[in-house]
Length: 397
Image (cartoon, rainbow, N blue to C red; front, side):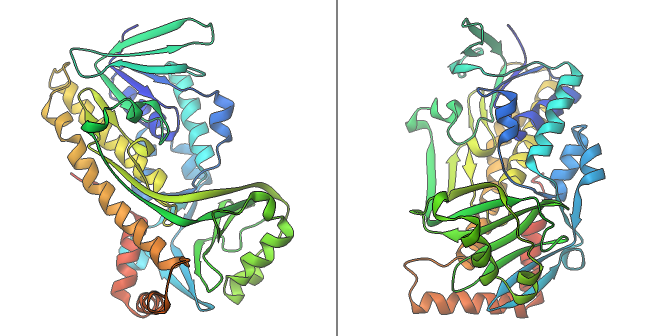
């Protein structure tokens, strides 16, 4: 088999990249180790920056997003029982959109199938046989039990934090940076109207962090900070709903509609970056290269910005008649992507540090956190900086 670009991973990052390359006339093959049903079963993010919306529209999958997505012109932060709205459009002239990642993935899968592009699901034992010399070669075991391989000009590693692409890189060639946080997020999905249908609510309290978000007008997503030692079984619905309300301001708490959870999970929080994001003919994007804590809803948006930039670099590369993977555009990808990655990592780390209760925090740390929140409540400049980062930093040119 032969193609121009092999994309490992059929999550949103890999599928968006495939669509953008297809629309640029660049042949690509997507490999995914899971089944389509498994890919669609993943419960993930649901808040999109405007640049992410624009990228999905450019990829040809924006129709349902624009019709069914719910614009958010505000967000709100709760501290000491008070709620401070941040008017995003007034502060920075931008907004975000609520539209579930599962729906994004569904739209991308349908568009790819309709276009006739090839995706290999249930590809087991994916191996990068070469990515540094004259050709890139990827192999896998198919559902027929036969080992298949494909030769390509380039490989895009969009296969997540635990994927094969980053793991294939020699440790000496890569530098990693990581911060693990001493708590997790207990997330609950319920088919009830959201407490705040037009703004995500972030809450800081003595009991810990809480978040009110949504996936649709009839499906809510809520989170509370919890110890890493907790298990889902420790949080029956009868415990979760009162704890959520206790961390909110009275108005938002009163608006919470309780209902049976349809999904419940505990996720640890970490910050992680691998440098560089290019190794010969192999390019990393999304969670394969970096992880951000979910505070600020940046993970999916950062992955989309990676592949939008990578698609631009690959298109420029082929426009110059190259095939050997050494064009100026491709050489610049890692540095350009990492400038944005670190800016987003900083915001997500700062927001996480600001809004959560840390087990080791002493009295001075508590007072500094309170002072920072009071500054955010009282300063238009501080709220503007928050809104600018929340709605999305401009793409690196």
